[in-house]
Image (cartoon, rainbow, N blue to C red; front, top):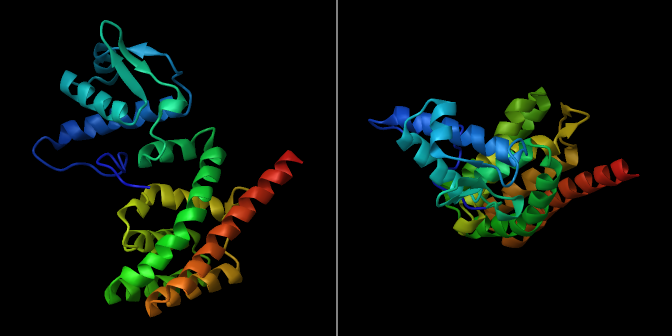
Length: 253
């Protein structure tokens, strides 16, 4: 769940004297990457830098830089005298934050969500325990504040604000767990939270029990109790997993 230099390709523009070329590059990466992951461009498809230049009306430098990023994601590779070849899903860097985001928004989003939930079942409790032991007092206070804001957003029914706060809450725990490998892209984390709160296409308020467990998690981290933090975190992510798996069983049945 590490971030990378192309994390948030669609949201973060690289500043500098040639920022316009970065914007164009990011546009090419976002469009081509999404189309490959969503299956609009099939495995084995071939094209050249000239094709990219012509289709997106960009310079050769921009086209080359975009292809290098997509290569680093495992979405394509270059072959001499052939050009660029799109790879199959088994070659993708599935832990790349942008690939995760594209998979979540595509036709196989439920599979990606299930895989991420299973990963979080293993990682979240460890991250929570780590935050209890390693986060500064300032960060622990911020986690407490976010838990309170989460409850306020739930009380007001402002679901978009609730998603934003819940994302910040869990991102802060990952970031200050003491293990850099536990960090998760906020783009991916936000989409996971949105899915966990969606019923019949509508965002719904989390249960009183889930809100209580967020409070318990924040208090455990604040007090430095790694074991209680681990338990509260496990409850939260396991409840999300149970909801997902029960919905899957209902569909199959």
